Length: 182
Image 1 (spheres, rainbow, N blue to C red):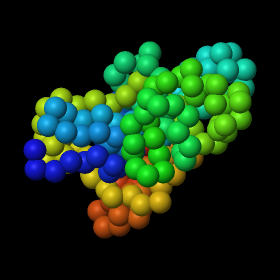
Image 2 (spheres, rainbow, N blue to C red):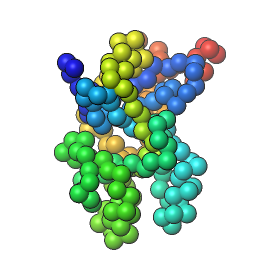
Image 3 (cartoon, one colour):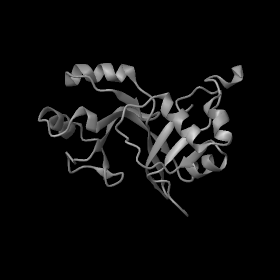
């Protein structure tokens, strides 16, 4: 493996498939010779948000992390580490599956809901799969600086990043959701 996409953002090209990756913004949390692991930052999961409202007793927005293992919950935590079981995304953000310590941190007010983002499932790629998809131009790899991964995001994140890339990406940013209607 020549290079890693860890810490980078993947921007999907618009397509007519309408699957979970259509107009997705994916943070690559880990990428090594065995494959890649990422989380979709801009697809909300209202069904899971409602379920967690009943579990936590307060509103928490849940995002579709990806199509793999949707029964698993992941947290991106900003700033403070509330558990010993975490992976560092960068110096400011951490990933954990430790729901018990995150919930305890919220209840004990060690962290606030604004300092976490909750994901159901994840996006995964096997050996060389991500590299092949990037070569086939299914993804544009972007270095995004100063992006707060815990902010609530929707489809405007995809559009804003596309517009900032300029050039041919401006056409994609302004294309209708269903590009066959263009």
